[in-house]
Image (tube, rainbow, N blue to C red):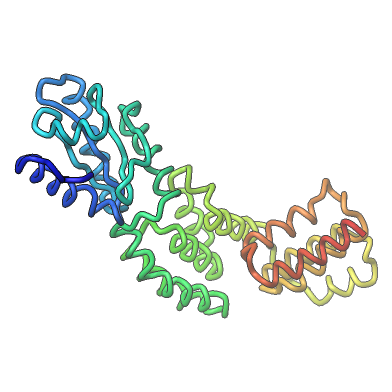
Length: 303
């Protein structure tokens, strides 16, 4: 927007727009609300926009209201023909027309989509970046078998970002390793329904399911010997897999389940494969161990 030939008032308006909208939009998502004092629908929509903007402020969203009577030139630049008109701005450019959305739920859904697509930087995103290395360290502690140390680390992080799903997943899996499956289940149940779709929460849920399924075996050595002597006893092999998982021997559990799949992949409606996939998800689908076991499974299924 050039300022050549503008009046002093117009230049002031442009400088204010540059300062309040263009510059913040370089890192934040700016909602532009074009309104007027005489506009009834504007007065109805205004409080909704203010509430949503306040709720999303930590995620880098801000609201700027443009009075079309006081800022005619700005309204003209955006070709505003009716009000209310609502745009989302990022990096100096309109990225979405939000005019059609009139409820908190509709606006929230639209903003969630935009924030997934755009590199917006708000306080929450910056905080998440700052604590990401500490989440990695807590995960390493958990992976090394120090569930108490990992739980303490994750709980400290949860004090900073209680809604961070990576932290919630870590707390849940640490609780499971410590034998507190009921507490882990309660934590997962407290999450909003949409959180269940997150891969990190799905991983924690799979770990809980594995913990529920894994039954300790009193004579693990005896059951191993029995399965070795009669590898077609799939019931015994499945119990062995559960006992090995309960004992923390994921390699042995995978071997037992793969043994069943290799002999009868459809046994018990594919129970061994389903349990193995659940084990994979509980460990983490990007884990090198899972990649190695997936190759073993593929060899059995497609050879």
